Image (cartoon, rainbow, N blue to C red; front, side, top):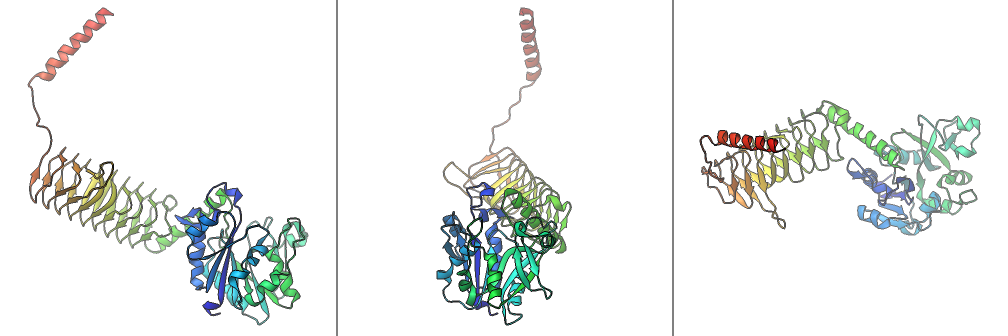
Length: 453
């Protein structure tokens, strides 16, 4: 089917009570991206003419997170069939395909959606395609009952199924592709004479067959249709996502020493021959170029690490950090909104924020850029080849010139010219024999106190 003939309807009107959260269920993150956005990003691959999102409670939250879709409100939650029916006015006359998906099912592949659409057009009379799957434990899922030719005869809910039907391993995911020319007419025929008093989308199968239309089945894997309805489901989805990202990274030439302890975000980019040690977290917005080593217990977010650099262990790179080629960021170093050119060394116990550091500069242990005065942030600039001694405080705004040296323990409040030496600390004084005299005097006092007791 031409892309312009597809309308996507995503159902997200459930109350999500099992999540026990003020955040809408479909906005909880997996890999740093909301559940709903995982699905929407995949749906965009269909290039649908329209994408509609049916919501109930939490409309404003969802609308803010999905400004690229049309929002339809289901004021009363009267079932999945009713939810789709609520889109009638928004969709208007439509003769193409309608794909119905669920906002809490984030991982359905584009290839599965395309297979459903292809199945809808495999024969002229196919009016409906239902997506099924074969879970390891069919449990209480509805069963898909097929005829000898594989066409769908009916969907049987577990509570209504007999022993033979319960033995069927093919289960209903709830997702469908429907002939848009018939969709709303079929929805008008649904009835709510059931215990819940709801209009079920699954009843479309019977309506379509009564009108002489075939109903086809496409199968997906259990992981493809993984839904998120609780915090436990969310953890399971995260586990699935992480396993997939780890495998993709290793397949692309990344070494993960202990894959299960490394966590990725949806947009993490790692180059070839990157080596990642255990217990590393890649929060959103990280790009790591070829040949980089990320050592254990490091946390990166909103960061670019250039080719051949080394980070960690126990390093924290915060948003805006840009680490140059071959640079070294060592243990217990924090970098924020700072650009470090090639070959810079910040080896240990330092904080570098709101700074620009030139190539091959060396930042000694315990160095701090004092970038905040309680109200505003200020910039520190360190030139190429500069040497900053240990335990230095650079009080921004301040510039240290190329090739300059700063003595250990200095508090630098004024600019340092190129190739100059700056030392800003109290002068050391020495008193010969003082320590010995002090010890003897204090020992005598202590002895006198003991006698008095």
